[in-house]
Image 1: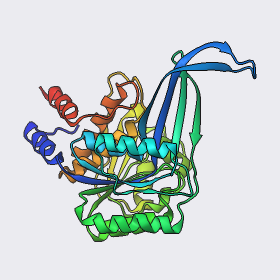
Image 2 (image 1 turned 30 degrees about the horizontal axis):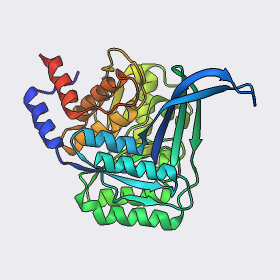
Image 3 (image 1 turned 45 degrees about the horizontal axis):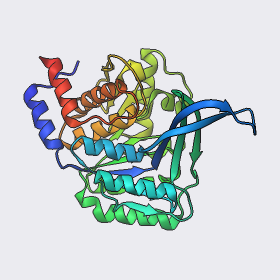
Image 4 (image 1 turned 180 degrees about the vertical axis):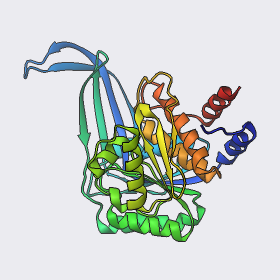
Length: 331
């Protein structure tokens, strides 16, 4: 079990403040339409939803940037939006939160990635996805990389947040990791299936159980399976650390040349797991950038993930709530 002394926790919390962390990846907009169903459409046998409320939230890499902000750090989201209505809404949300938009580029060739959920009588009726999964055009990739290279000296950490929507191309991944290692910048990865083994030589690689199962072609059920999967990933990716998230099973931490560590989940009651992965990668990266070692950072990330699972909906964890909860447990 990891035990972080109170003095050390307070030191780390102070160091979170003002850390500048780049979040590179697929920016998304989550759209919600809430209403009631009182009749069936005369046009087709489908319910007619009378919308009473609609709202918009950050999704994908943008939600990671919001998590970074709530942890007291300074996020720099880097990605693309389209020149469309969803792009305008996304830009308005960025302005409202005070997050920098300097790394966000308009790509005329693709739509803003948007996921629209229609909810009637508290029942999720349908989800409508508007997106392109094609890789970014080379000239757009170049714009993103030039921005990253130009601003890299300001970054205390970089998160590569991949949802396989085309922003993180093999070329961009390789160039950003190479730049980070050359400049000794912390770089963490939350992967998806397509580019999984392109993320070599990073500081921390954080897949979940299903992602690891899919790419390794194995079921991860027993303790032995977890150990085998973690060691394979460390070896194949040449990562300094692998953090394998296991849902209700907590997390497993693999560090080069050191024994594997397990941490049980901190969720006392799992109300909603949405956004937990975003919270884990955000907290992990912020803690490492603040000077925590991998076990301290994993402990805090695991705790933050547990707290967010206790909330309904995608709710970032504020830095005070996280550290207060950890400190309370020590009393």
